[in-house]
Length: 188
Image (cartoon, rainbow, N blue to C red):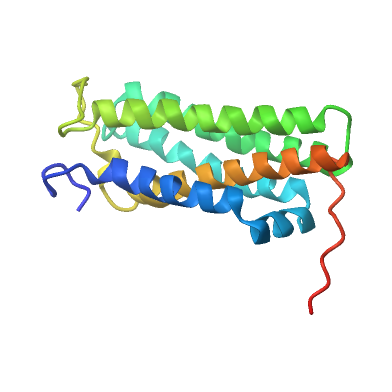
């Protein structure tokens, strides 16, 4: 379905944006999600994204000639950097160091900017109606299994995790405690 010409409308942007457009308002407004965020250490949502180092798959695709460097290099470098920084930022959040909340916010913003760049370049170099740049190697890496799972699943999931992490850091700042989880509400 994601292959160029497989659908009259480009499905990759829909696979990325629809879960984000639908999920973000729900996750950011839900009181229940807020209670869960209060009960979970702030470091967890950050450390979870260590899997972003798997964005190195785009470097492999580039070296094999199945993805243009114009797309693969910024996408892979941004993902790998985000994944590698997830652990030190999570450790800082866990320790409660001064400035750890700012580091968490900066890390989340960096991760979201990485997606903005990677998705923008990916869509503008992929064959289809949104293609603005025609590289010497067609950018079909994100349309073939298993790498299609990155834009179809990992990208929207990661964007939602960043949104939740930012919400959690903001909630903790309002309470005056950036790291210590709130007491879990009693279950009746």
